[in-house]
Image (cartoon, rainbow, N blue to C red; front, side, top):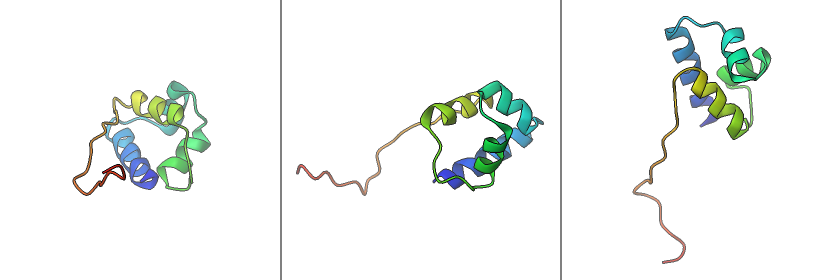
Length: 74
């Protein structure tokens, strides 16, 4: 979920010893937006912003299929 991602981003930022303002500047988002994201107070975050924040922290998203997914086509 977006809340879980925010929590992981906060943990990574702290692990690296970075301040929110530094990550915000590097990723091109506001410190307020980053703060709200990390605290799970956003209902949505655009993909470009998410990727920029993750990139600033040396993180990336990988996609995989889940065994429980059932195709509607057959």
